[in-house]
Amino acid sequence: MERAVTALSALVGKGGVLVLSGAGISTESGIPDYRGPSGMRRNAQPMTYQTFTRDPVARRRYWARSHLGWRTIARAAPNAGHNAVGRLQRLGLLTGIVTQNVDGLHQAGGADEVVELHGALDRVVCLDCGERTARAELDARLVAANVGYAAEAGGINPDGDVDLTDEQAAGFVVVDCRGCGGMLKPDVVFFGENVPAPRVQHCFDLVERSAALLVLGSSLTVMSGRRFVVRAAKSGLPIAIVNQGPTRGDPLAAILIDAPLGAVLAKVAWDLR
Image (cartoon, rainbow, N blue to C red; front, side, top):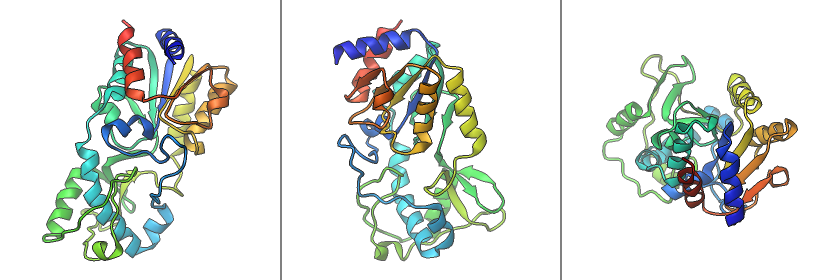
């Protein structure tokens, strides 16, 4: 592995690197990923856009679970991997950072102009009027609407919600948009929902402006992120992948490192001056 890390340092040191990150970069901050090192999907079943918008009972259950779980996301601190990416950006070695994560930890680790491919949990959007508000504001409204509500949460899930039984969620009160009374939703892309086309195009543009692609903590199982790896390969860019476990991009990679991301990225970032 030492030889691969040295090769990664040499590649990143040339600059022009686009970072594509996934849930695996945040596991060291206490947020689980979808598959784990084995590549097997965890049991958590993500909410789909269709179910959220059409089923009031499922929507209430989602908000009860998310209300309890989002505090874990809000309290999470950036780890050595996030800090390393922030340092690489400050050194002028990155053309951009595209993340599939919704936790905001790249920004907390010192990065800016991060493309949040799937949105962010710290914002809420009204599906009727389109107004976006801070999640902290909604949290305060939900606390006020659910005085006396108590439920013992299970483990945190990758989407920032927790495990609750239907009985535990049944007494939860959901609130609507203050402006128009419309349906509120976290400003994230649910399963069954498309990433906005301009955002996708911006990411493709970043690939075309880059000299290399560095994939961090993503199994590249879904096309949402894998399409940028495919584009990079077609454009002749060298691809490096640091992940715990196999990825669907492995056959396209010039450098593969299967190891905890924090230690690897810290070594790369702080070896470069």
